Length: 329
Image (cartoon, rainbow, N blue to C red; front, side):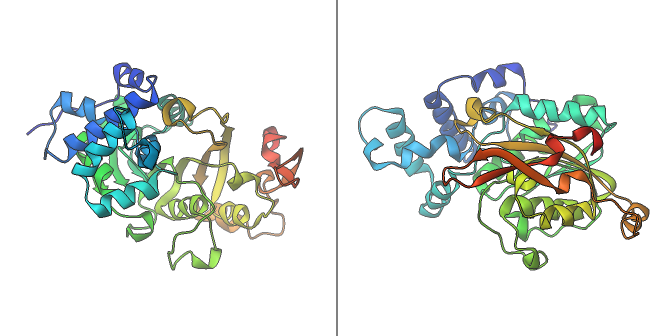
């Protein structure tokens, strides 16, 4: 059956201004719906698009909330009947990282890409949740694009398939998906943050945190002059160690970086984190060769400077020099 292009509208976006309880119950309803259908009508796709991710449901797993007519209890009771033991365990472990990205931020990223001349092509979203980046892509650009999404959680991968049947969705971890290098024009999305690692033998020698691993693999999957437009932890640019940024600089040019306020995800995901939108262009082979010359100047975004602030342990916090002198990046 023909599926018209589905896009996230202002009606759907308005849903994310509602209370946490409304978003949580809508997420549970979307999960229930996704388990009962093999294809979705336009109205069913609207309901599926209201799913916020497992992070919205963090409170329902707290034992003290499993009683009374609270939204936490209602969600818990329904999911207990819908999900297998394995799915429940997976959901609990995903609450720290599985959040819906602000649609306002997503649209700003598409505006940024349009400004640098991106008009469409082969696109990868490596941690796609319900593939909202595709749902917010400008329609003319969308008609010129082919999408691949990767989502570790099989329930949300199925929702993405129902919402966007024209996309190819892998229900696997990014480290387990085999894709050809230099095959995408754009990698876009909100990568998982955290001080933990995935095992991928190709990148094991780099000893990367999960967010930096996603950047490293995306850099290989994008072709020459292709783009990476990814939301990542502020520690990608701000860590005192320069080793990973030097690694990236061997393949990528930083076009721009935007530091998001810590409230950027509060409205949609009920979480506060400091994150950056990083836009990179992949270097051509000739440009890569130029980096081996003795006249090569290390780009400014490799370096950090003291911010004048300390963390909770009293340790000095650094900030990337690009945010101090972006005009000479």
